[in-house]
Amino acid sequence: MQNFDYMTPTRLIFGENAIEKLHDVMTAFGKRVLLTYGGGSIKKIGLYDRVKEILTDFEITELPGIQPNPKYDPSVLEGVRLCKENDIEVILSVGGGSVLDCSKAIAAGAKYDGDPWDLITYKVKAQAALPIVDILTLAATGSEYDCGGVISRTETNDKIGYVDPLLFPAVSFLDPRYTFSVSKKQTAAGCADAMNHTIEQYFCEDSTLLNDGFCESMLRSLMFNTRKCLADPEDYTARAEMMLCCTYGCNGILSLGNSDSGWPCHAIEHALSAYYDITHGEGLAIITPRWMLHILSDRTIDRFVKYGVNVFGLDPTLPKQEIAEKAINETYFFFESIGIPMHLHKLGIGPERIDEMAHHIAVNEGLENAYVPLTEEDIKKILTDSL
Ligand code: NZQ
Ligand code: ZN
Image (tube, rainbow, N blue to C red):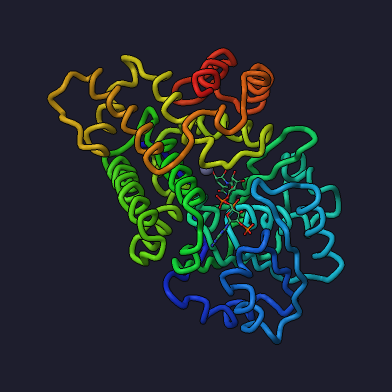
């Protein structure tokens, strides 16, 4: 087991009517609030009106229109400008992972005098950030319980994971009812994202029985509950368990003491989203089984056998190679069964820019240190196999 130094300072307020505590929670941070949200889903489900009603005695400045794969320009820049102009004391993010990620970058940018891109690219280390409170409306990223945010810069095809302990949300409100309206497409993509977060931590050199058990249980729960959410979007119990699974997915708790895996599928997918603005979870679902097949070898086969037996209930007496290949197929068929288009060409991505993307990933993502190191040629092969 590896050494670690770990803390997640975020307070989780989970369950039906959790929002009743919003006024008290916000009061502790100040009266001047930047309310961030996306393209309108929170208005459709009545959450926007409810928040405004609860916070009538607060001074609220709004930043609407944050897009999926949130953009540095205009959203982060505009948010930072609004914080500075209005002397904002706390950010309230209401929406999915994109709104929250954007809010994290704004929180750091608001306390920095220079170009916020300096912080996101780690040219300068942030010294402070505004506190963030969020009301999550989509189960997927785990951003509500981690200190990372992923920001895209369209003109340079960059999509950068910006991680800093200053960016943990202070408080996350998790009411599963707010996810009832999430479309089938986004429900499936959210499941694929959380499953991949788990898989990225499970496939590593050095892990423990404890962490393997957490991960296997997460994967089984995500598959079971996602099917239920798709069959009945208002199944509270299924939405609730899916939400909590997703919350656990990305803050490292599943891999304390494990060796680092390098998160290769994320490194590859972030380039796909950066170049083609696709839905993150869909890109991951497509890449994952191709990456698995690519790294299957004598060295990795035991991990695949364990995965196949404990996650998919495969027969442990079968030959190892057969179990491993079946496990990879099961992964593919599960994603397909929840409606994810399992080829890049179905998302409008052809072979044209694969060389360029593979180069971009190889140069920027450091996959030579991944669980199974990936060269530019390996990345090209995985992308090509995903077409
Ligand atoms: O914009 P609105 O109108 O709110 O609609 C959103 C958006 O179109 C909609 N939606 C959200 N809640 C809804 C809803 N629709 C109906 N009912 C609701 N209750 O769903 C669409 C997608 O939203 P988005 O926030 O983009 O999805 P998600 O939460 O999956 O976030 C994806 C982003 O997070 C990043 C991804 O790369 C991507 O940019 N990630 C962040 C991570 C982190 N911070 O730790 C880790 C992840 O690996 C990931 O990279
Ligand atoms: Zn992800």
